[in-house]
Amino acid sequence: MNLQRIVIALKPWERSLPLAAGHARQLAQSVDARIELVSSVFDAAVADGCDRGDARSRESRARAVMAARVELERLAVPLRERGRRVVTRVIWAIPPYEAILTAAEESCADLLVLGVHERASPRLTDTDWQLMRRSRCPLLLVKSAGFGGYRTIVAAAAGAHADRDAQGGAVLDASRCFARAFGCAEVEVVEDSRVAILDAAAHKCAELVVVGAAQSRGLPASFFGNTAELVAGELPCDVLIVPPVQKPLVAAAGAQR
Image 1: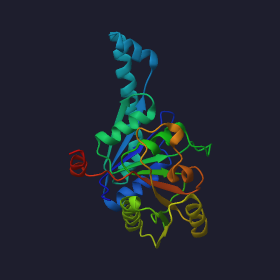
Image 2 (image 1 turned 45 degrees about the horizontal axis):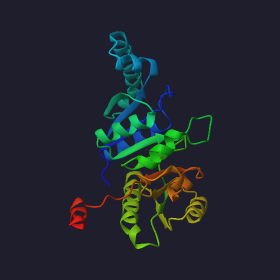
Image 3 (image 1 turned 90 degrees about the vertical axis):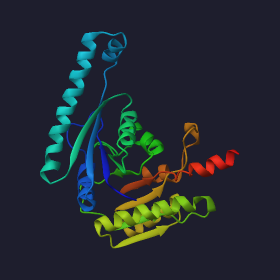
Image 4 (image 1 turned 180 degrees about the vertical axis):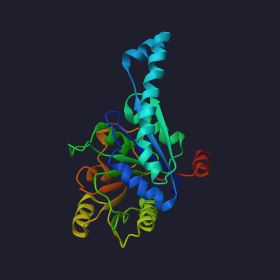
């Protein structure tokens, strides 16, 4: 896992740096990575006017995007004052997770960082769930407001099935990357099952759990319920979700012959 570009996603209703920003800043400082702050803005009435070619609607959209960009630049100041390379980006899109996914892919993000809920609520939002299911880069779900590094990491990489070997390797690689970045004293490797992960996280007082996401593109929502999604809502600590390992194009082409 090579961390050079870290994207911090802000939800439209956030008016201050999300709790994920401190985690991303410390990680970026450890590995000398660039940070990109991403937010989205959208107004249905303005969008409808733009579609009809209305000049005033286009001006309204431009003003909305500019105002959001000015706000992001304000939020970037404390990160830059701490010596981080920070760029900002605003995307006109709805729903918010589409904007975040677009930014992450166009930026070739190595890591997407997201505060998984508002400070007043422990519940995951639809944006959280959609990013868990669809992000093509590792997704760090931040739950803890205070942060002093990850001292104990649980890696769910001991799958019982042969087809999980590549995914398990990716989980271990990500776990070791974070362990090196934060000087982690211990990485506990466990079976990638809900019970094993929750038990190990509680027993070890883990500050980060790393788990692989199941391949989910093209499947109906009712099919979801993989280990990553099951534990993400229950764990009190941060969760790093590693996306499915993509099969080489050469192998896929050979299979079609």
